[in-house]
Amino acid sequence: MKLNGIAIDDTFAEAFGMAGTGVIITADTLKWARIAAVTMSGFGTSVIGAGAEVGIDRELKPEETPDGRPGVRVLLFGFSPDAAASQLKTRVGQCVLTSPGSACYAGVESDKRIGLGKGPRYFGDGFQTAKKLGDKRYWRVPVMDGEFVIEETTGVVADAVGGGNLIILGNDRAGLLQTAEAAVDAIATVDDVITPFPGGIVRSGSKVGSKYKGAIASTNDAFCPTLRGRVKSELSPDTIAVLEIVIDGLTSKAVAEAMRVGLKTIIDQGGPKGVTRITAGNYGGKLGQHHYKLRELLP
Amino acid sequence: MSGLTFRLTNAPADRLDLSGLTPKHLASIPLAEVLKLNVGTTKTGLKVGDVFAVSGKPGETIKFEGSTNKLDFIGADLEHGSIIVEGDVGVSAGSNMRGGRLDIRGDAGSLLGSGISGGEIFVKGSAGSQVGGLTAGEKFGMTGGLIVVEGHAGDRAGDRMRRGTILIRGKCGSFAGSRMVGGTIWTELGFGADPGLLMRRGTLIAPSVDQILPTFVDTGRHDLVVLRILSRYMREKLGALAPKPLPDLVRKYAGDLSTIGKGELLTTA
Image (cartoon, rainbow over all chains, first blue to last red):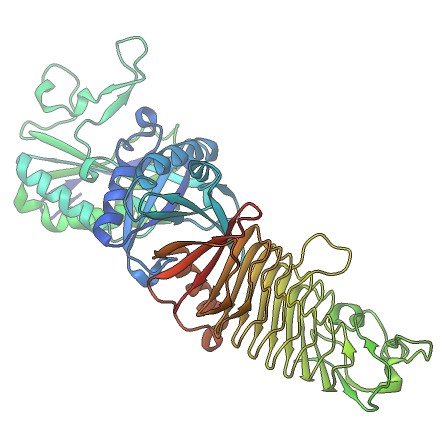
């Protein structure tokens, strides 16, 4: 099928069940809330290599945050609730606690809870105190610019989704990147999803396995333009670059919506920028529980 | 709104113990049996029917009309539903409440909400001593819930309080938060003398204090994020009844240093 001159493969994105959690980071200014959120999200690209996939869901107005200051919601996805809790503790302890003026609250509400302030509170060395309001408990940890306030727990959902994706191919590398950036910006308007890779975009799509012992993934040679002719390539002769957008979401519905929004943006804007084809990554449908068919997500 | 209404017909000479008159308890008793419930506290053995005219049918709400300060333990052990009192109440109203709402449209005696662990108590008038205090024989006073007194409160509010929030719109008496181990007491017109005597943890908030204990230390003026959370919590819970927003900077006194000193007295003026 072709739309606006862009071929769309009749295929599907294959995604996996993950544990998803989140936090709200606030600070005196949005700038500093963002700095803490970006720092916490660093090295949070692929759960395989980084332990968690982390990214900013959205910015929050003061009236949307527990303390009435500007904030940012960060989502974190791991293999299991325990794995997510471990990553959360480390990242919040190193990146949010340390950030001037910050405070940290539950960003996901669900019955299942994992520790948020349970670990970082011990930084208070016995001077920390708790304040329970309603059914929420907050820890107040004395720090050099006042107090770091952190909620004791946050919610975690065990049926989150990781690995929704769109792969775009084209004959203009710069135009392809601009189109992918626009798609990531559009996806950012969808709640409960993140695009965890740098700028939301992956240029090193992977295949399962490697010729080297011990490497569980390696370059997706079928989509590497410089290997065309040497391997069984997926690329047409005019394709010179391929970029992928990976999407994680707290719900399958959110991931589908994000893919739909991204797909529409690419179709609307990609043609003049050299986008020639859209496809999606899958493993034959046998590994992931969630399948997102491109034809069902078309505008 | 279904429920029973208890209208006081004879002003009793005795104090009455109304601790059994909760929606949950009355739902399991036929109306004829309700009239036979013992509410007296002397050997005269007063029954409900001797002092109240009862109307309506059991439901989630109970209403007391013509109440006086001799009616004790109204709303004690309330778990759910609501109790509305037109008039004053005696001692220990809302004692050991675990949920629901107690609305007192008059004054309350001492030990209002003693040992409360959940639910909400609203008093239109003033309250006596030991609001949210200690039920005899217990280790802690209030351990959860919310108490709002629109008038003044007597001495020792929050004695041995562990969790929960007390808001006194008027002035709070002496020794507020004595032996406190957690929770929040917020007064809009100030504390009397020596708040926080022997407090270990917890928060006391007031525009002024008549006298501060020498075992509290001035830590300076601070912008405390937790107060923003507290203010929002109060706005969400109380709407128009919520206290005025706190200033950006409050003065914090830490104490009581004769114990572990992790409590705080915050003055807002």
